[in-house]
Amino acid sequence: MRERRNNICVCVFMLLYCMACNNANSPSNPAKIYSDTTYKMTNPQNTSRGKELFEAKCIACHGVDGNYKNNNAADLSVTVIDSISIINIIKNGKGAMPMFGSLFPDPDLAQIELYVKTLRK
Ligand code: HEC
Image (cartoon, rainbow, N blue to C red):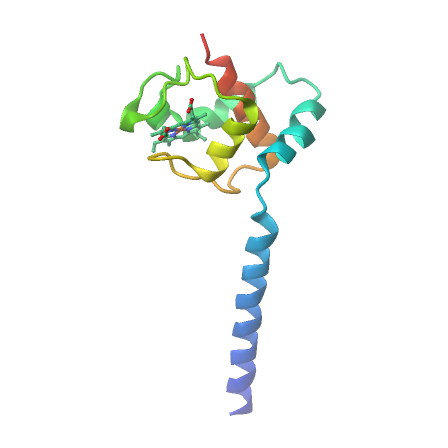
């Protein structure tokens, strides 16, 4: 009986721990991510990592050139939104675009954001 109670304690503890973890990741502040990472990159011109991630996660809707417009995706070759808004949309989603939450570590997010801007004509 005592053992079962201990198991319940462990479960409750783990549940609380998981919730705390999620909270630690969730204060998604796009402006902070942008200022923390983008300007600190040694070579912001090199967006090969951003390209790789974009081609893995984004082209299904946006296409390699950003203008595929599948699922009514915004045309990234003509978009004019600023960097912080781009980061915000990737993290939190918009309309039919899914949120990517904390899937991308901040430096990767900054790389994708830089790459998205290279798609503009
Ligand atoms: C399931 C399809 C889908 C995927 C996958 C997707 N998007 Fe989108 N995206 C959309 C749609 C739809 C919109 C338009 C949202 C709206 O305005 O309602 C959009 C809008 C955007 C915008 C805003 C453009 C503007 O000018 O308003 C950006 C930036 C963007 N996506 C970047 C990305 C990036 C980067 C990825 C990959 C990490 C990605 N998207 C993955 C569907 C998608």
